Structure formats: structure tokens, C-alpha cells
Length: 90
Image (cartoon, rainbow, N blue to C red; front, side, top):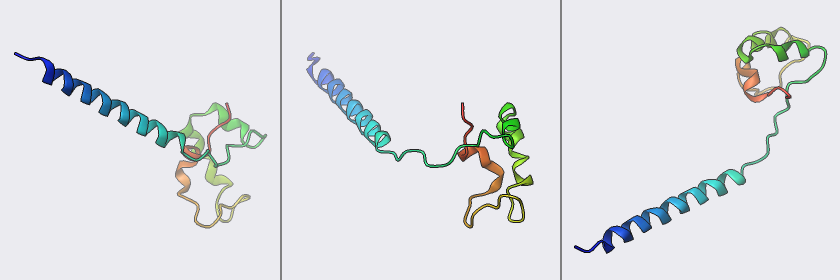
């Protein structure tokens, strides 16, 4: 019995694994920076910082509608997941 073929196969899998990890890392490092504005930390929005995301998102449509105080721009994604993109400041 010659253990050499099994050793070569293991080495090949290790090289493939490392190359795959390097490719994923390179892809993630080339990702663009986050460009969506964060949830403002002003007197109007401060109350929503204490709430859970889903709870806080229920209140967004009170002001952010086409007829509201702060209308959403044309082509804006669905309004029901506001804090998915507009993260809270920590």
C-alpha cells in the first residue's frame, strides 16, 4: 500500500479550500462602503432608538409618505423595512 495518492489528494483539497477563502475575502474587501444614511439621532427619531426594529418601523409612515412631512424620493424601495437599510447609530 502506498499512502502517497491520498496525501496528494488531501493537499489538493487544502489548496482549493485556501484559494476559495482568498477569493471570498477579496470579493468582500472590494465591496462598496455603506452609503445609506443612518436613522437620525434627533428629537424626532430618538424615541425609536429604544424600540425594536419592527416596532419602530410601524411609526415611520406617520411622517415618511408622499403626503407626509418628509416625502420619500421617487423609486424608493418599499417603506415597510426602513431600518433594514437605515441603521441606528450605536
